[in-house]
Length: 327
Ligand SMILES: C[S@@+](CC[C@H](N)C(=O)[O-])C[C@H]1O[C@@H](n2cnc3c(N)ncnc32)[C@H](O)[C@@H]1O
Image 1 (cartoon, rainbow, N blue to C red):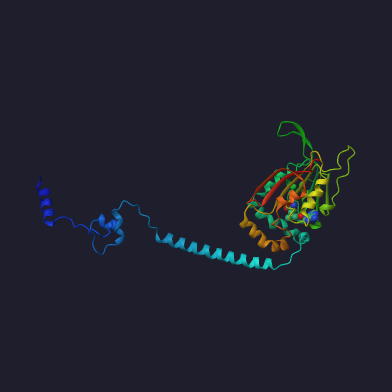
Image 2 (cartoon, helix red, strand yellow):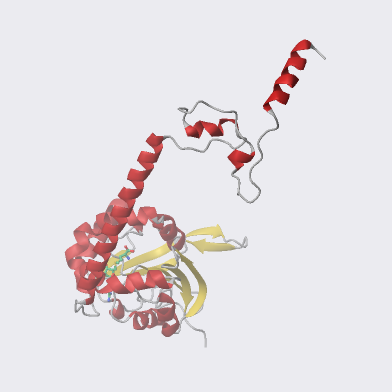
């Protein structure tokens, strides 16, 4: 044994054995594995310096930012909730008629700007395009509004292969746009003439959809029915949506004709339906639209045959391909 080791053993023997904790007393990990003794004034948190645990303490700056953010968020949520309760109370005290379709005469000029952001966020442009590109033959668009679907039409018929590789005819032979509001129709007509200056087989009618008659037969024996009827976001605005669909069924070509719908209404979720129900009167009064309608039930009540059905946005956006019921 070297002289230095001999010296250390002698010192250990002189100090005696290390003190044991009392038997019945609970010991903390720190006492069980005592850290090397530190001067009394040292920061007690530094005791963990030698422990195997990683350091998880957050810098005070981050803690302050987080605290302020949480406070801001909770204040904002509180404000939102208070406004929602106020709106609900106000909405529930209103008496709004079932027919709010006249509202569009006042909102026509601001309609596009009002819906632009929400439609962008919900990617409605793509949904409108996918629906409207199916239109072919003599086409009728009802509740056309300001013509938000115009840019998606394929105007003029052409021969093309269908998805099964069969030769068929695509595109629209003629298009007729109908809306109850003359102001909305005027905007749609203006947009159309800019988009398709050379296309002549087009008509605009300010008319109730229930009064729309079938197209007059052409010299080639075509017509008397529409091959495709399009409606987007229209069932929410009319007083008798199922009756309207039933009428559309009578002017749709019975063998191959289709009614294409993109609508909004009730959700899959009860909590969201409660919000829609609570605010419906105020929304209808301001925007001319009952946003809590059960579109599926309206379609079933119409008696039309469902060819395709799809829903998005918590179930509030509905897409249907319908056709007249075959006997
Ligand atoms: C929410 S806007 C939708 C407009 C457009 N289809 C769109 O997707 O942006 C509803 C439209 O339905 C029209 N409308 C309401 N009741 C109608 C009726 N009975 N006949 C024809 N159009 C009607 C309104 O004038 C309004 O332009």
